[in-house]
Structures are given as structure tokens and as C-alpha cells.
Length: 305
Ligand code: ZN
Image 1: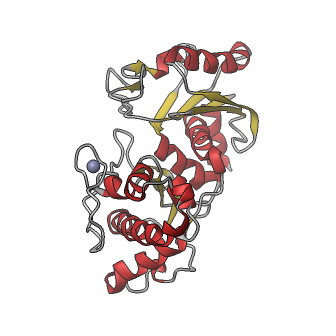
Image 2: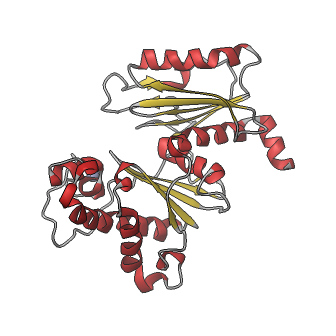
């Protein structure tokens, strides 16, 4: 059996599956993220019956961060400098109480979502994929040839330096930079700029969509220039704003223009920029695919299949 765990700021999703069929969940649970002690205890309780009957071939984790993902670091698997109360310096991997020798693979939550969508969702059929999330924070996970772009660290694109919209005088909300991408386009920035939440913009929505699209398109252009993915999956709460995804596609084509003539992004209907297909399971399914790859049985099956 393999296990996948996605730890998020508000909820944890755990699932177990057979490594020969990682797309079919044998069992799944949603746990509220509270204190590390309670949350890790709930995860251990969910895993316990499976751990007791043969243990796990491997475990994959996709975690909120900052989290140490370098397996050579003595603090591998630790949540480090998070502002989330109580979670700073939490040893996530040890807290799971796994049997000694169990292979564990750990990535950030957005890389996990990229892997999940790549293997089971909107990224099926391409080798190189980017997953971009615009919500409370902004991030990107990149899959190259079916594997995470890097296992020692992760892209940090939320603080991208961007061109300001000529009609936008908002100072921005990033505590480090003010008007970086996250400062101007994250969920909290939308709420701070317009004085109401992004889900309730009313008559302000048109202006909000124009600004958000202008900024998010710059992120997608950067990802395209730097990583040349075959498809970009865009998730996160901000992108649920009606009309925004189409506006982003149009802005992206305008912004890139002749620099990438003939690229699929120039055709807004090409399917280059798409929504996720796995709902709130992108991350946990990515974690399961990591576990499958780390499990001897899974690797054998992958090679044979
Ligand atoms: Zn910033």
C-alpha cells in the first residue's frame, strides 16, 4: 500500500492506494489543520490500520510551507519559518510515526498539485506542465518529463517583479515588496484594493478582472519564457472570478505577441491555459504519484506498463 498526504493551511487530505493502481483511492480522509499535535495525531490514526497490516511501500507528501524539501538537509521534512501559529519548526515526516525505512518523498503543495494534474488530471498527455495557483498566495509548480523541476527546492514566483498597470495606484500588500505580483494580484490584495472580497465584487468586478488579468498574464508569460511547458493549469480561488480566465488568456496573447509567433498561447481556444480537473484532490493525488514512484512495486509496474 502507498499513502499520499497533502497538508494545507486549513485542511489535510490523506489517501491510500495500491501502488499498481494509484489512481484509485482505497480510502481517503479530510482533516482540519489545527495544532501540529492534533493534526499529526489524526493523520497517524488514519494511517494506523494500513501501517499495521504490512506497512507502507512508500509515502508521498505535498505540504504547505516554507518546508525543507532537500533530502540531504538534516531538517528534511520540517515546516520551517511559517507564520502559521504553532507550526514553525514542525518535523512533519517524523510526526507521521512511519516504520523505519519507509521511503518518503516530499514536495511543496503546489508542486504536488502539478504532479497530480499531470498524471491524473488536466495535464494528462503532456510531458512538461506548469501548475499556477493564484489565491491567498501565488505560486507555480513545474513538471519536466513527468518529474518535479527540482527536488532540492521549488520555484518562488509569487514575488515576481511585474509591470504595473497604468491605471493602478494601489500600493500592494506584500510585506517585503509592496507591489510585487503577490502584492498586486493575490486574494488578499484584491480584497484590500477594492474593499470587498473577490467573491463579492459586484459592480467592481469588471475593473478587478482587468487588473487581475493584466498581472496574472505576466506570470504565465514568465513561466512560458522560462520553462516552456506544453500546458499551464491555473487554479486557486482568485481564478474562480467569473470572466477572469478568459481575460487572462487574451492578455497573455497580447503581452507575448510576436515574441512567440505560432505558440499555442496565441490562440486563446487552444487549451494551453486550462483549469484543474481534480478539484481539491490535485495535491493528494500528486503525493500518491510520488509515493508510487518511490515504491519498488510501483516502479516495476511503471516500467512494465
Ligand atoms: Zn513580494
